[in-house]
Picture (tube, rainbow, N blue to C red):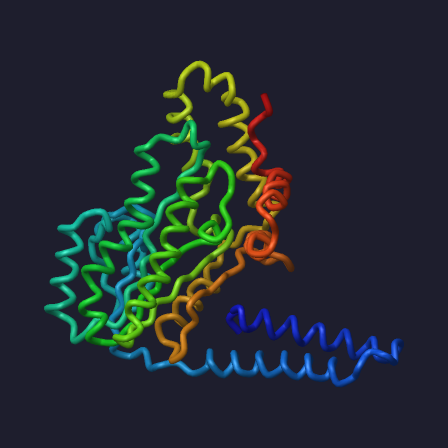
Length: 342
């Protein structure tokens, strides 16, 4: 079963109800009706969500456009594109689409309009990362991150929504837990995903009267699958940004701490959090958003095989705890404490 907020609520009510039932054995004053009610409510939530996930539309004949399928290579003739062609269904067609290029977006639009009966869904998956302290990270890196992660989604939606409205189809935007809980040394990426979250909410409310549903998928730590946070991907831009800063900033952010220790800690963080390489939970969430008769507005997907996903925990804590408390909690997140106090 896909882990959604309803499943989480059902598990909580069921667990609390069972715990109260056990307590009634030792504490007679604990009302049995309360524990029974909580348990049954949890069971009802789980059963309802199970039935919702089973109730899907037929997939046959539905056309879906997915951006960002080639880990950012942007080459329909490249190695990644060829892998997609040879390993995936014969129904898959690889197209050249840079979400920052209006001409390529227009070309794909014309191709779909002229060759397909209708367009059922768009999955906005294209995205890049942006790491570094606000004082150091280059504006070019920040701008490119926003251009792909946020404005790219806007470009694609504006172009393809006329077709989606006709089919009364679906939009699924791939966001991140970093769009719900921001972290130090990750401001460029976090603000692009926070913007995507608000865009998705606004668009969902605008499209409701047309019968179009908009969902947002919020994966946690799947860095081993996307390779976006791989040390080899961070190494060059981090060093390049550090080389351009002033001498005063270099004394505040020493290379051995800002670059070397950051790269080392990024590896340590993946090991500690148990980052997942299998994207099946994300794939299932996307499929549910596209084909469920009652899709969720949000899918918060854990990125670890461990019992507790720290990314999801931070999101829940961020909703309820004061800012200063969250600051202290995140300050103690050792893999991200890379800058010495001066």
